[in-house]
Figure 1: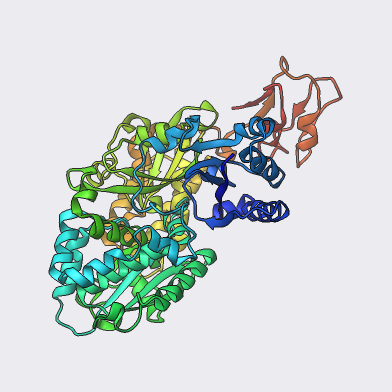
Figure 2: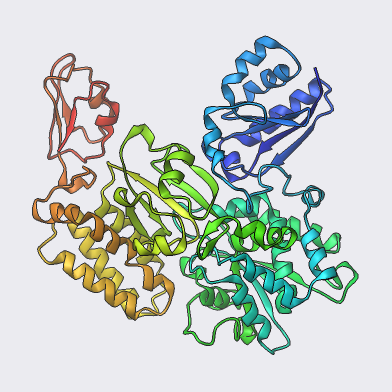
Length: 594
């Protein structure tokens, strides 16, 4: 039996939350006890968040990945790879991926193309040598040694890369505008202020491969002539901040950051700014105000950041995913990137899959793939084999795409036509039991809370909309509410200064557009078709199915369920809080919701 060369444990935030540290420590103890000279290392996430903790065993240059690993399984995994057949049979059911093994989970990867996530789950993010071993920092060496500013920008333009932060503005054009600015001092900014509910693309990239972002910023700095950069990352991402700080320290030690990089006249340094969690600071002018130590509020444009940004100097801002693409494009050429995608949407896009989906996690797919392929082929379909109802793209600024449009290609123009936006890449999947009116209320409550208050339309208009949506979900809706929501939406979109206000009504407009009948059912018949709005539903017990087991009575927090053992139970609708605990506890499908 050949030697085990390396064992990797996924220790991004998702892996740690699932118990990855305990598994890592168990592996450390087991290899020490057996006196095995195996390299044990922590890595980022390969995207299979739904199967964490994940462990890769590298043997004969080939990897076998185990999912949902517990510390007690560690010894069996090692013994299986040391040749014990009975242990091999024990651990085989935990295999989720393998270089020479076909599993049911392979469809998760079959349609993915890894560019941004090319190193995540493979390298130790705290080890710069591992990044270098996978062609890390070769792109900046190529730029400094062989290319001009104009040639770098030309390559980015030719690649077709558009900003992955939401708006989709062509990256090369943005860089060219900043380069053309005559001011002697310029800045580069990485927008890592990922605030969309259900989004974790930037966090995972920063945790799993921080050097790719740093190298991308280096290339951008060279291209526009900047000497200083900032990574603005939310303080709620402590692991990402920690790994970024370490990566910057190591990059300086190796001569990739600081004065006279690689022995040339090019100098560039990076600072980290930890954001306090204001969603509006994802907007570039509010973000710059925050970096400057001011309250994060947007300002009018023009002037655009490329002309007057940080402290009035020309500034180029891109998000984490955009920067992570840059080294790949420079090193392998524009065609290596634009061979993927369609029309004006080139390359790949990273999505975080969340909600009612079997394989929740992080995926990177070529532009032009359909929503159906992402949700059902990559994501494994809907939890519990329920019916797909809608997908929310673009977070609170996006919109809901219904089942009838599930074959929509994932590209900027096609997604925009549906009323949603590509956004930074959050994809929240909803099933038949989702109330679309309540979804609109949830997202609007988020944007209303996060409004900076500068614009009256956004500050007051979103509050009025939220009040109407809340009334509707409470059974107090009235004729004309839908029309009022539509009117307010248009006024807020046209009267707000920044993207937060301009896009805040999108979830409301798309749910009205595609699920108007649900709004009307709430308003006219005081019913919630999805049985989610508590004020519009009642719980009762089916006498034909109730066995009198008493489980519903035990779990009811308000004492609304009464009945003798082995006899029919009843629910007092006046006391009932509509929490749903009784339905979840019943093994006989006796709880009715109407």
